Image (tube, rainbow, N blue to C red; front, side, top):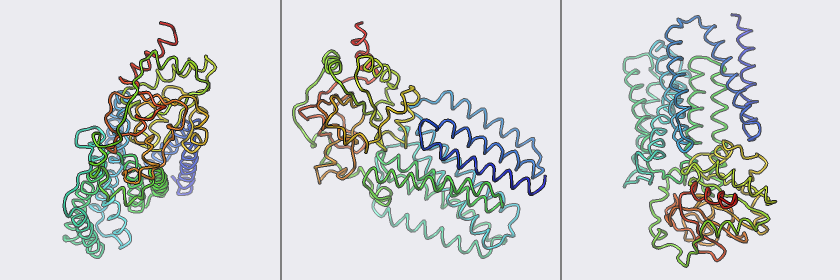
Length: 460
């Protein structure tokens, strides 16, 4: 296979990656964008394998096993577990880059200083991504505590680990072909795996959307460095695209929380909210509502805005919410869905859930677009959202979420809040919205509660 054809195929694949990434920015084109990107990767893999003249029996076996695992996971995973799966994907990407750099170094220890540097970067970033993603997976799945785990001297320990890694890297890059160089490489790998744990464990569950997008960026950067190690152009391009898009998304997530990235990574958010816990937060009279009460409120409304949160995902209520929305539209009610950038446990979590239920894309409204209209909204229905609708972010300077942009549901004429209980959200603080004069609390499982409303509308 001629180098000209290979380069042309890589350019074609890179163009598909960029086109697919562009199409992912809109819900209406995201599915096609995913297919274009997958086609680009398929072309890149086929051309790379044909160009190398490899023994394919082990490659085919690995692809068969990977395909089987992927199909089973895609079919069986619940939408509530999608953030955990994304964390696993990030981790697998990281460990792949680490192993690729290690294998190349093992086979060709004689390498230039530049290749030694990128081999270190691929191994170190890949190792951090792998164990960091495993910690994120554990927090998201509830296998380990979702709270920030901090201890005295933690920042000093992390700094010492990083200095050790950089020192080992400097020595390794000077003598990669020596026996001592191999020992240094193993030390770098072990330090990276440890650093992934110690740098992620202090981050609380409320910050997981930022962590997932950051780890996604790490996996891309590790792949980009691995591309330099094996001199593969398309791996460099793909890794750079993933790394850059992940960084951009991380910045967007931080802006949506009104926090810096350093604050997310090093503040131990969630460990000092005792003064704002369920017992010590805003108090007052709550106004419970029955399904019949909520039905009459919705039936008389000219405009209804649904505000989904993680509770919607837990209850798997997206389909019945879509059904209720259809019934409201049949009643000549204007229906829309307000999306907060960090609602849920991964970027775009609510968009994915509502898209699964075939909610029209033009009914999904971003936070900055819905807030100016909120005074004219008759009813806001908050389904499982908590911190992203908490008015304390606007007016309580002592609140840990003060300054975070929220969906200003409290300005609507009436707010219906669907929750199982009065428990606080990820930030561990009580929500002043629950005690507002225009708010009614509709307690119960979100799916069952919405089903009761659907039954009321149908007259069952």
